[in-house]
Image (cartoon, rainbow, N blue to C red):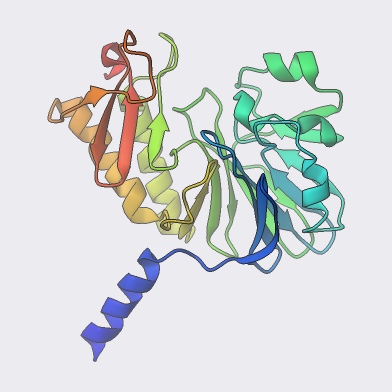
Length: 271
């Protein structure tokens, strides 16, 4: 009986979370993940950006702003009527699209802030590793994860075990090393190990990513472990790779895969 119970638990952990759809059209879907937690997905390929609304008794936060200036606020208002602020996981353009619909945003000052400085009309606050956003009966903690960008942030809700990670760990495929100055794989491995520590001690069980993908499978500790194993294999030279399938033929960028985890990298920046 114990074996059957354990098997069912493993199966349940591998299945997608059930979400209740509250709105959809040809361009977007809005789903209620659980009480006070919503996911907004743009349906246009290839970005298919994901945003999240987390509501407390007094306030709410929106995590990321998508890849276009869609009427995001009207979708947010389908989820909450509380005052909202925008939390950015990073400053790539496919996460900034509707930022001007928010009066305030939070971003890590280590990020490339050029688009915000040029285009954003509201008030900018700088978020730091460990900062806590109190929403009224519910708190969200910001934690810094380097690699995909210089100041990537994840946002954790310990009451639910949910983590909203942007592109820090990708959606199956994490893109690293966009420029010659980006961190080597050894730094990313240390960040992965830091995340594994958070998951073990702070009871993070589900990772919600910055793009469509979690509808097909849950991302949890096994995914992060695979990402860490893959990074370690790269450092040991014990891996196979191929040309990155979304880069130009002339690009040196490559990709390597272990189960569901794929790391996109520059061959000169492995160590």
